[in-house]
Length: 409
Image (cartoon, rainbow, N blue to C red; front, side, top):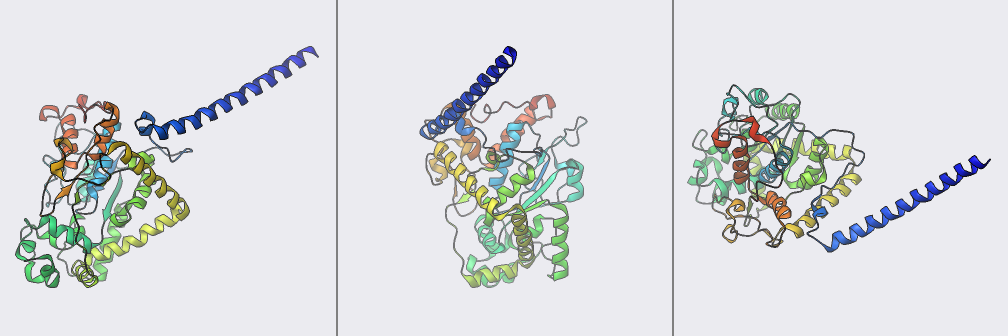
């Protein structure tokens, strides 16, 4: 009897102890939230925000991103650069900036591929003209493939601004409005860099942009893309796209939070009739856009529209939180106002490319993470390249990652 009483007492005391610990834990949690809001430089602000507490999948590490032109691809590239940087992944790097674009991608154009101690590549994401057989030579068979599209009308306006100095058709045209009115007057197939002037998405995907439009041809192209790419995202629905990407890759919310990069100072609005003309001129691209717009929203429906709304809200709140922590201004700034060359955007085309300035009062670790989020693709690519190829040669032993040390130091 005495033993039973002792046992019951122990259980009672243990139960009180558990309840006490739970109360203390809840108090700490509430206090932690309070202090977090008061101190924007609290290191916990930079801890990844988990969106999958009952996560059963494993994060994907083998990724192929077809970076199409003028579609918010630079922002996605930063996301991939940061993820690979933090996790010690190996990028398939071009010898220069692009994989000999506008030529079709070829494995021999990947640094280190032809060496005896060829690395095992994790991420392929820099500009290329897609060529599946050669991509498969480089990337593991379990790679996740994705790309991003944009309305060809607004894409054409951006392309004209950015590539006017290189595209023969754009250079011949006295203005963008003149080009819209009669594009075939200025456009000749095969002339220098004219792929920027017609069906640029179709071209980047490896197809012939000058093929005569038929629905049979366009449908065959769209279905070929659908059979290869796990996800086709949309610049106009960027936040929803990032949630679908996070889900597909089994990543955390912070992995897909970003600030817009490679932003133009001012996009020029188009009239309705101009939009219709540009969509007709880029009819193969417009077919792709409408085809995958349907599949995109089917994926959102399968994900759950209410769930998507909640996830997008969380993404935007987290972006705002990190913007308040990291950025000197809520709006992008001119390149000449950014004193740090490591985050100054490259200038090309007739419009100014804007960037982000970092707050000056940040602690070292916080500043490093913030710098990663605003580093343009050219500078980040060079940093990753230097690590993978120290001295210009491949040496697998040099790939060890020390998060938070490179960009700031």
